[in-house]
Length: 80
Image 1: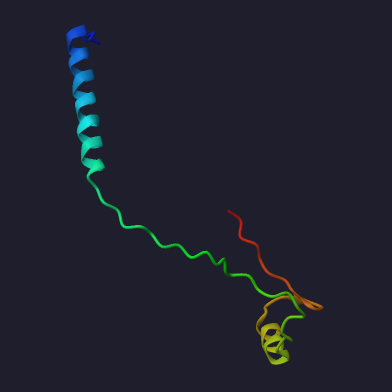
Image 2 (image 1 turned 135 degrees about the vertical axis):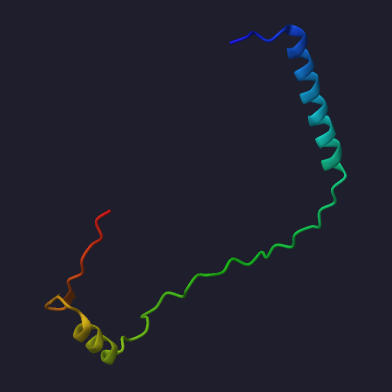
């Protein structure tokens, strides 16, 4: 592979510096609107007893399950 001359290396270095300087100058002119952020953190639930399960839903789920053992539905695990 051909070696690059020192003059060419210096030219590339100067071009890169000019590109960076132009970019820094251009980005300095950009005006951004302030983003209003909510200070309230949400998404947490209150601890408690929870809701009671729907017995009809449970009955239907167990009727539809192809394999079950006692109070457990036997499900196939995906092998990747």
